Structure formats: structure tokens, C-alpha cells
Image (tube, rainbow, N blue to C red; front, side, top):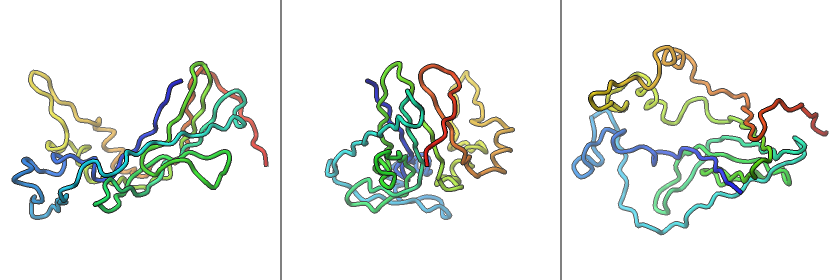
Length: 200
């Protein structure tokens, strides 16, 4: 049996000091250019919070006969990364619960685990209910525009390439709205499956 976990970005904890413009933690912690607010993290005691354990999603075999079906929704929520910190804004995955549609499966930050068996078809439908603007939109815009501080540069003798092609940067500049249509992923035999009507 193999397991796969759907992951999600989690608040400012994912930003490295380099992205915030700091160069030496001892000399620049909490400081930055006059127009940039750099968050200050207090000293935190280690190993005081239990390690989060992703729950396992439950397949619904009634949607596609002969296959395990999962309905996964991406949503914005909050997560407390340490007992001494306030909640942070995060993006997470939630799985529909075929036994109780009112109680989604997930913890809010880490996605549920999808357990699959070899040679058994698995269908996953992803729903995007994330906000229309990324929580780090200004950083993404800077990367798209080739900001030297954020975009990695190749060491000699290699030449750096922009992280996004020029035409993609132009297209993305006018379209910040995420795609809301569901993407369906199949594992197992690659073939078109008939659409079965759902019950009332």
C-alpha cells in the first residue's frame, strides 16, 4: 500500500529570511528598508507542540464503480504553528466525507492522506475555493518580474533564465483569478471513463 499526502503552503512560516530581505539574522532581525515591515519572531521553546498527523481520506466507491473516488477542496484557513504564536493564514486541503457530507476530512493545514493500492484505479477531483489573490502575491509578482533578490541566479558558466517565460508573465499580469474548474486525475489505466449520473 502506498500513501500520498496533499500538501499546502502555510503562512509566513514558508518565507525564508532571504525573501524578506534580511542578510544576517543577528544584525538585521526585525529591521529592513524604511518602507518594509519585517516581522519579528520571539524566541520559541522547541518541541512543545504535538507533531500534526494528517488524517486519511475516505474513498467513495459509488461515484465511479470499480474505482476509489476522492473529492478534495482547497481552502484558506488558519493554523497555529506554535503554542506561543497566534494563528497564521494558510491554504489547506479538505476531503469530502462520503459517510457524513457535513464533516469534511482534514486538519486545516496539512492535507489528508490518500491511501491507494497498486493496480486499483483512483479518481481525484480537486475543487479550488482559494481566494482570488495569492497570500504572497507581491512576492510572486516580484519573481515574475525577475527581481534579482528573489529569482535564483545560475552559477558560471551557466546562464540564468527567467522563472516564467515573457508571454506567461504578460498573461499572468492580467489574470490573477485562479481557475475554479475541477481537475480530475486518474491513476491506473489511462482511458476515458463513462460519466455516471449521481443519485438524488
